[in-house]
Length: 639
Image (cartoon, rainbow, N blue to C red):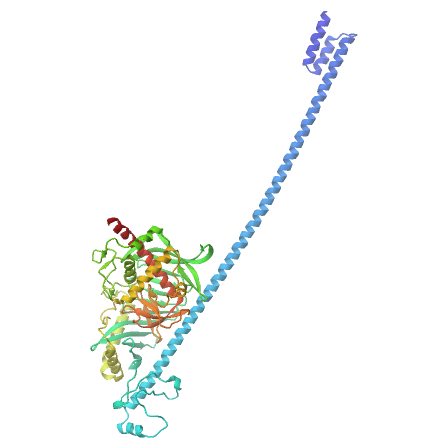
């Protein structure tokens, strides 16, 4: 019993222990010859071996699973690497496509820039040809006039009996009678001079045209009946010259304008220094205007401009940019405005204003139009409603136009805001025009400029020469008498003892009302985000009546081939019968300052310059409306 009990205990132990323990147990508890115990131990050993095989099989299965997982992980890693390689390839392909697109865009911009530069060069060449043709025509007319004067002088100095003999002598030519025309020797009938002759008393009357007289020393005087002015030019051996425009009141000469021209061969520039201190410098790739106070405006050959204040700080700069205009990427001009002059005060912007000028093509000529800033609809409402109470024009009125021009119909009060904006549009171009001296300013130009001081001395000496030659030169005396007979009032220019001043001029009521209509039309364009362009004016039928306002000083050539200047506030209009689809527009000066081209003068203005005037008109109106609009709202609130 004790042995059997020991066997049971051993079996129980073997069941819970390892095979080695069973073997120990068998060796320890089974007696030799005990077959039952040995059989049981053998069974237990087999079971232990089976359990060992099972464990080994599980280990092998686990190892196989682990290997499978590793293979799967490797496959996933390989797939990830392949995806990364494909993504990298797509990225490279995308970058290549972007680079190709950027390269194509740069090439397109370069081609467009080259085309614009070529078109600009062509326009400049055409304008130069037109100016040369106009100057050639003027020289031909002057030569014809000199020949006519020589013939008249010969006839006047012939003895009386010779004149009578010539009158009674037979000949193939009919006698000169009232209304007949004389023909210069060697000229065809189509080249007859337009002149009327009066046979009575043996005298002839010539229709007004420019005539020339020599004063000696390289000085010539040309009478210009159309403008009632005498242009005196002194040409010097070094290529420089002095030009002086005179009017006569009684027996005293008064200077309308005068300037000296100096060439700098080394730098390829021509500098024109005016008596009032202004300077106009023309180079191969730029034109620069300088005012006596230090303001300067430079226009480059590619059309970009930049202006600087007297202290050297910029007013604005322009640069080329690529922007999206009306959903299309376009090469535009971006003008960064740092400061502006409003009501005679310079306003410096903390954050510069950027104005965009987008291209407009007109009969193949590219021009750049200002893109207006669109305000909220409520901004425009006060301009339609009007003032709640009429605005009286008094010295206390802060938004009333400055008294720098004379309106043909004086204004006592404003009830229509558009009329106020229109009048401010007229006067602000005079008071705020960059480089314009104040109308009331009577001070001479700064004496520190030796070039201006030299011009003053040269003009004074030239004026003295004219005064001395009046008594001894019959041609000059005849021209002066003829010009005085054509004058209808006192000239507004100043005498030579001080510089030329910008004086107030009269705005005809019809011109004033036309500008008011332009302001009203421009509000509608502004509200609909439409630019003001010359093509629009032509297509809408408004081109013939439109009044252009000069904003910056510029040089123009009249139909006689003579140069004259235009500056801020001068008004132009398309000449009667002039074609609006030319690259150079024939315009007539409506009204101007004393130092500018005379009223009635016909000048050639390029479409690009005309569009520039429209741009400045548009931008100025935008500034004026922002100034007036709060006053309109305040007027409505107080009412």
